[in-house]
Image 1 (cartoon, rainbow, N blue to C red):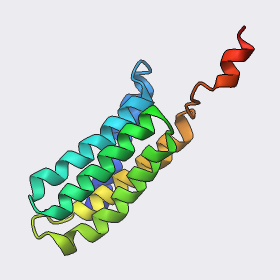
Image 2: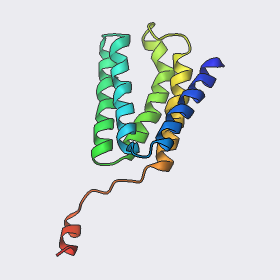
Image 3: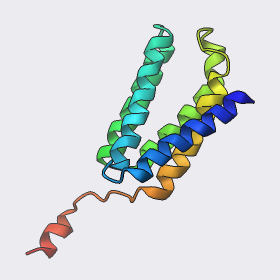
Image 4: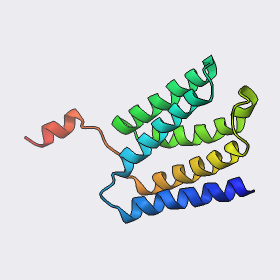
Length: 131
């Protein structure tokens, strides 16, 4: 249960910093968070499963930031689900890791979903309207 509370405290601290420091771009911070998550798996083990997970989260992070922000939200939620499964694939996860990360991932996904405005790609019709 402590892992859950530590996850909540961590998430509140992250959200607090993002709200107090408005110059931090939430879209970028969320994408970097997901990209950082991808790199954590490299530290846990070097077999094929973490490499695959790394590429999935990193790809969702990049395309979520560049094209469709909902991909970052999906990536955070998927990471939370993966955290529940990860101990079955690797014995190197520290105790409580899955509950802590699940809590942080789901709460941050919900926060970013509420607070980050969707990014709209420039369309050809937008260029015609500006003439």
